[in-house]
Amino acid sequence: MPDTKPHAAFDLAVIGGGLSGLIAALAAAEKGLRVALAAPAVAEPDGRTTALLADSIAFLREAGLWEMIEPIAYPLRTMRILDGTNRLIRAPQADFRASEIGLDAFGYNLENKALSALLHQRIAATAAITVFNEPAQALKETRSGKHAVTLASGKVIEAGAYAAADGRNSMMRDALGITCRNWRYPQVALVMNLEHTLDHHDTSTEFHTETGPLTLVPLGVKRSSLVIVLDEAGADALAALDETAMARELEHRMQSVLGKLRVVSPVGRFPLSGALASRFGKHDVMLIGEAGHAFPPIGAQGLNLGIRDIRAAVTLAGTAKHESAEPLGERYHRERASDVASRTASVDVLNRSLLSAFLPVQALRAAGLYLLANAGPLRRLMMREGVLPGMGFENLSGRLRNGFRPQRSA
Image (cartoon, rainbow, N blue to C red):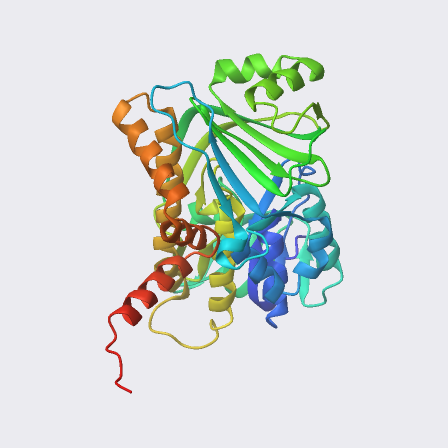
């Protein structure tokens, strides 16, 4: 008979074993919470990489994880944007240097496969985390606003709070009746890792093209990860080439900025799409990562946005045992809604602006990059906001307040 007796109550149950779920479980355990992790075996991560920005690294450091991760991560000290289009109105080159805003690096790039392996190792050695190697099948209300999760084996988990990290097709989200808007773009991303003959000098280079961005991110000595966004016909044509011909074509598209290339990983293919839940929490459940939002691999926002979800969810889970007039899920939704909406909108607008053949749109994009390239205060504001959300505008408001403060006489 299945074991249907509820397992010892946990402070937080994390549902899902992707990167967001693994990080959430470890961060919660570091805060002293008793954690259940429902993490079924998943396919081994592919060759994709993740660029973790400064705000995410600060959180990982607080959670006691960064020291373990740093040896497999590679710094991004400069971000360069180049116009790779043949359009009438072209944008100027724009370079953004982390040192301008007092950072050693904007962030660090690492392979998802290596990160996942390290997180699993740490979880196995963490006594505060109880792992259930099976999927969750049902979320059932036990009393008003409180739930229990039933696993595939029939085991039942009860917790003070739930972090739903079960992806785009989230069972937890659907069980709560939270709707999710999904959309598609007429584009496909090809991803791969490259070796090259020239040094990248810790510079991430992004070419803006008519079909979307072509982005190179450092991944070791004379090694980089590549994401190239194309229309479907272009993706089919490039993917059909053998490795030698593909390397030559990529060298041409990226103007040989890294010299001769060699493809050193399988080529992944991912149709571009987006998703946004109508709300991010309800009752005692909080949606983190792609259970609540998903968008194209542009601007290194995906997992970084998920880590900000995790920060809020773990903090709120630690307060779940204290009575509150407002349910935890509602508090979480209020805290995360603005950030998620603004980041989703900015990625969507940037992507669509690259696709637009409308001259005024091209002119606006070019003018915006010109201002960022040449207006130091604006450039620094946007850099801070990009890697440390909220800090750029907080810094601006502080300067404005100080600027209007009356000076005391001597």
